[in-house]
Image (cartoon, rainbow, N blue to C red; front, side, top):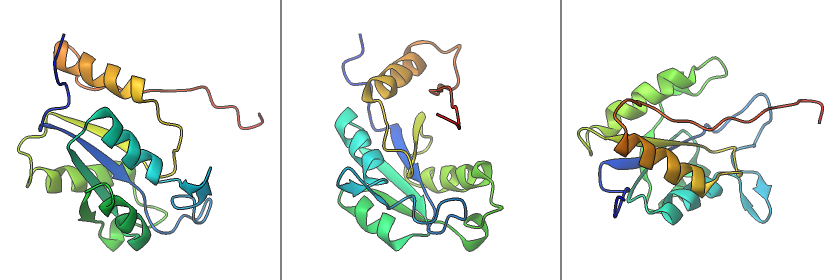
Length: 148
């Protein structure tokens, strides 16, 4: 068993932009008494991730991230549009993270609009990636029924 799976080469990256056309304000809307993005920062801290990054163009998300010692990755305007691809945001953030951690072994990706984060799944995913080199990524999925 690994003593501390969350060493310095494991980091968290929370992503969320200021303006959402689908549901404006979703990344900072209050859910159960706190902004939705705060759940991601809390999850990273609770599992023991030491290096937390946030990629955003939103001053409010940056301010919340500072409470959790998150390092800000300033998202360029071209990566904060309705047409911006998450993949491009991740490549940009990865290149910035490499300036602090080279190379980051594992990046735990957290979305600012998701308060439903399982600490158990984060731990299981990181442990699996650290102990079985046949895997290069892990992610959780759920069935989504838009009419439920």
